Length: 396
Image 1: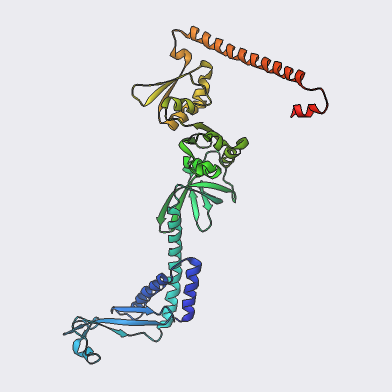
Image 2 (image 1 turned 180 degrees about the vertical axis):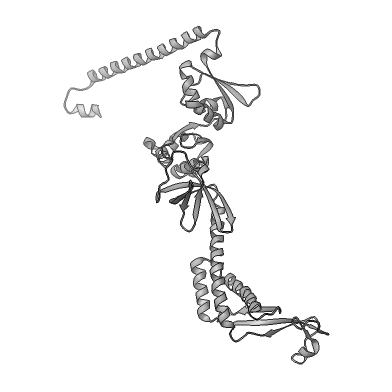
């Protein structure tokens, strides 16, 4: 052990982010065990490594007593007084007992301890780093697939994507890069185990936080999110700022923001709706794109009956009930969908007639609006100047 050893330890401290004192203390403890093993003694020994020079000394510690009962750990008072008259019974004295060939033993032991301590320290650093990142997303590269389990390289460590956390129909090709949700981080004998997910609803939330600055800044808040991985997600957003459209902020110009999230989720459909504190309005919004006639809150206060036009029933329910199922999960309400004719069986014909008439009226109003627009355009053309110079200005 010499100055070169200390320099090597300092290099490891910088490179591996392992404390120099921690390494040297570990080596000292290992050398104590090595001394006892190699020299067949159970004496109470201590090892000291000089932090500056790297010199090593072994000391044997004994208690000062009147009558010696165990020579390996005790020494008579009269013996130590001859060396130093200040010693008293109950004191402890240390003898320097460094063997001549202890440097070779120390070097071998130090190498083993340093390597082991580096591995433990690196594992500890990785664990401390990722245990505080649970609930976040991380980018990783597919490294290998074994028995339906996908192993993801994340730089200094490896993540595990179990079969249950994989999206059905999604492909995981070697060397492809994806984003994952950090589900859990556990300490094991082999080091930290980081469990990832592609199915967790939190993945969608974190992706929108990356893409939408208004969400990052807290101006727009994600109030609820319901997801069926690989198929469809409903997300409710809200803002207190009257000057911001929360849905528009999430969609982005020409849908660029939501499309980035959809692409990362391999084409999963995403519905973004406005959140409302009014349960009726919230349920109505959640059933989008279906149109809702009426929302009736039931007496239990935990369920609601929703009436939709007959021609909107299948859209409100969705394929295999997906739309209403996601809406119920998003709002936290049990939702029962009924068509207009089911809810109003006694006056179905009358009500249906009213709705047909209303639809015809709307169509008529649209035709009249188009006609008015054409008349206005024609009038504008008649009023426009005929000169060539005036025409571009009118067009603009």
